[in-house]
Image (cartoon, rainbow, N blue to C red):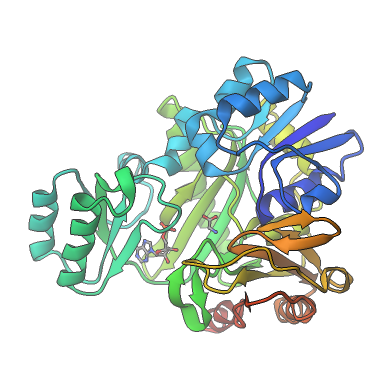
Length: 424
Ligand code: AMP
Ligand code: GLY
């Protein structure tokens, strides 16, 4: 089998490693891939968002199966385009990817089907949003409707901040067109949990839970990023809570999407908050999370390729999805200045030494002669697994400390909040 993976981050590297375990997979291609994937995949210089180019290339090169990993090609309909030329692909079609592509859609879906989420209102007129804010309780959360690379969410402590956020989004297009509609919602509190789940549209099989660390600096300070590190499982997510989420959130969501004529197949990401009034959905993503995937897939004991095919063929109910009873921690090594301004092209050393005790997933890297150099904001994800979470954290940091590049930045507290919250 010839498999193409669309994307080029740590998530895609982690997916490629698991797919390579299947003996029927002869060759893996990545578009565009990265310096780490290049060591065992053939990288194809096409942009992940190039729906036409990638579809044509896959057809010409007799690709048997495509994994579309990032949100933008999914929302652009890459899975539909591949299906039209007869190539099966992992991921939702365009109609289903809207669950991430539009916050207005996902909030309305949850309201219609009684899926627990923060109370909210949606606005497409600035004046209406301002009126609403005059009497709303603070803090409050203002969100741009469309994909805004995780940056379109502003937590506002005061009315002034909220008014400014709405003005920036609706009048000054701070998040581009995605801000012409906004969602204003209740501020929730409680531990956050990410649950990725495989689904074929009928059956849903959750993966081991995880927790992201979105802020750039220790103690959850600094700007929001794509994610600075993850742990799995999330110690706040008990078996009772998992059962409750299955009944109140996961199954109702899958059924709601089918009912709406938008059957979801692929990986659905549930961003949850365990509030004092029960688990609530903060966001859906139509794909594997990154860096969540970098802790979840190393714990998967079943065959990823078989599971992905089952989500396409509708046979997930008969397919094993089993995880190791261990913990994992991923520490992201970023370029200094990320997520704002940073330089690239610095040689990376210590990769081999780190790989002796951990898995090193590449994100923003590329090959330059014999060197691997930095080529993005998030450069590497260093993942270790161990019997306990504290042991996994220690091992991941020990490996991460072997790697160096100019201006390298990492958080030193990945996993600490979860350990604290789980004790409470
Ligand atoms: P999102 O881009 O939707 O994942 O939101 C980014 C982060 O904002 C989330 O991970 C939460 O930490 C926070 N957040 C989003 N919505 C809420 C809410 N209603 N209440 C409290 N925090 C929120
Ligand atoms: N780590 C959060 C995301 O992938 O959206």
